[in-house]
Length: 396
Image 1 (tube, helix red, strand yellow):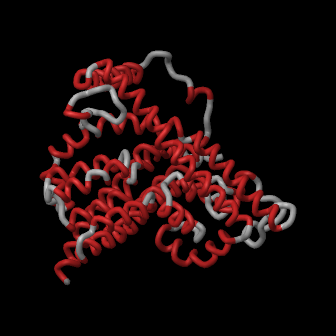
Image 2 (tube, one colour; image 1 turned 45 degrees about the vertical axis):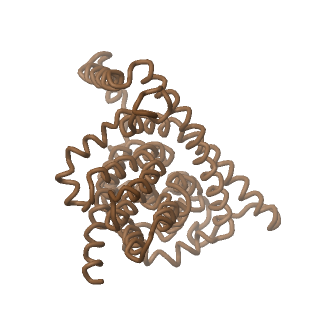
Image 3 (cartoon, one colour; image 1 turned 30 degrees about the vertical axis):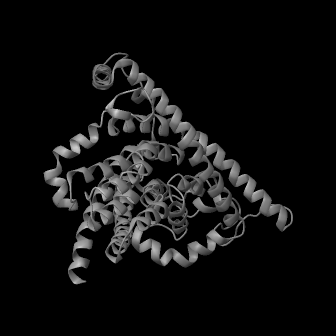
């Protein structure tokens, strides 16, 4: 075991009260004072609890449905060798781009068609994860997050397109997201290598025991006929999805509640009611202060457009809801659509689920690094989309 994973009684025992005790107390008191002074104490707590309840009903159960279906599909593909085929065919592409096995391409597909937690279903499937090292497993969350809800974002933006230039903008946004995915995974690889050291190159299956056969040339199948194997794979995969859905509840609810309360504004008529998803709009306000930097980077047509990426870090669905109003008011143009598509896909609510995903992938100690590297990739996606769109329109 490497020094990174050694745990001793001495390293885990600290004084009952030390400096971090008071730092934590100040941060908690400061946060509640900030929220309470703007929203009102009773409304603050009501919004907090109502938002958590709304997230469980409308987000967690949705994500659980995604996990159940993707878990079933992945298990079926693993049972009948499709993952092994993808690994063999796509390794020449995935390794140069991401430094990952060809099987990682399935993560791109499932998250693009679904949502980022779909990558967790893959990470828990033995037939999939056997191709990855411990280091590479830690990079899966960043890979999946970059393509999350890609189909939803793309089709939504295309539905708003009114001409060729707008359609080109959506395609440019997708291309920028792909480039950003390489940045995200490669940066995370650096962090994972430093954390794991030489041990990080150990295959995940070796950690649990490799068995008495070559897992790269052979695969273990379920007993019974074809029908029994199909049903067994679907049900076992679906069951793993339910377990994962429950596992992501703490991280998703806690972090997303905080993000929403710092991102969203008051309720109807600009008043606080204690309803779900209300907040103090702190993040958009900070972004407004930085518009002299952000606008040249992303080429936004108006300062209001900054609200899109700020909201997308917590919920891309909420940020997409802003776009029709922006278009109707003439606040955004084709360049903004390109940037929105790229950042919407790359961010896609990652701040609310990234920690939970890293936890589910047994990589909790690297959660902070995953968030940081993916933040850099998301900003890069917007920058690349802007200048790529500018370059293309100059040529057209």
